Length: 137
Image (cartoon, rainbow, N blue to C red; front, side):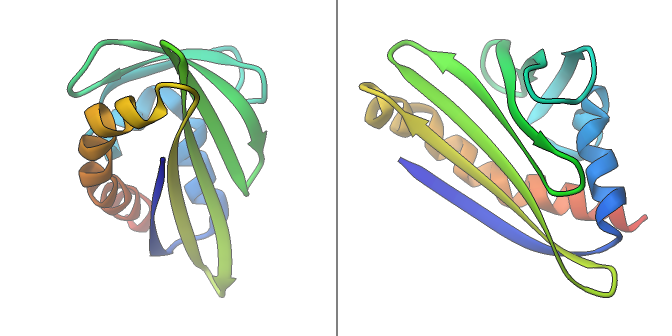
């Protein structure tokens, strides 16, 4: 199961990336995050903790971080992996398309997709609007 949302943002890609890289401040622009932290640098292989606004704390692994372009985090569930992909695509001038994609992978993906996926899907547009507001300030 997979779903995604996109938004156009009028800000330099570097500013958007800096909002992503400041992991402890995600809750300032993402209404679905209560708190977040990273152990070490914002780079591939780092680990952290994410406390969603509804649900238990989750360990996250930064699977891939590409400066000014994208980052992907994963969280393990029983017999399922939840993957969050974040991509930045410059359109022209200082306009950037931000895409957030969520995937559930594994044997219990259909179950977790229904249990948590619907709530995440509803929240994605609000998350992207928050990112847009923070970047365009």
